[in-house]
Image (tube, rainbow, N blue to C red):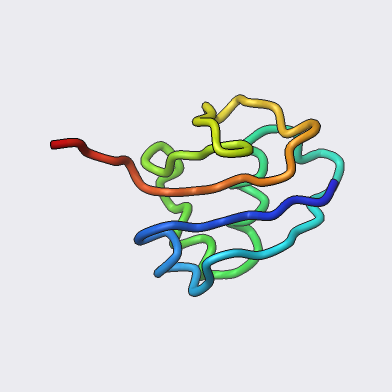
Amino acid sequence: MHLTVRYFAWVRERIGRETEEVHPPAEVRTVADLAAWLAGRDERYAYAFENPKVVRAAIDRVHAKPDALLAGAHEVAFFPPMTGG
C-alpha cells in the first residue's frame, strides 16, 4: 500500500513535517493501525500520537473513525479536534 499522509496543526508541529509518502506493511489495515505504526517510527511520531483518542483523521478528505479501513485510500490526514464558532 502506498499512501500520502498529511499532518495539520500541532500534529504537524510535533512530527516536524507537513506531508510524506509511506508504504505501511500489510497488517496496517485501519486508521488506528496506521497511527500506531507511525507512532512506532520515532519519538516525534510517538509524541504526536501519544493520545490517539484526540487525533482526528480523514481518508481522501472525508472524516474517518479509527476503525475505518484504508483499502483503496490514496491520502490520510491527521489533525487535532476542531472547534467552531
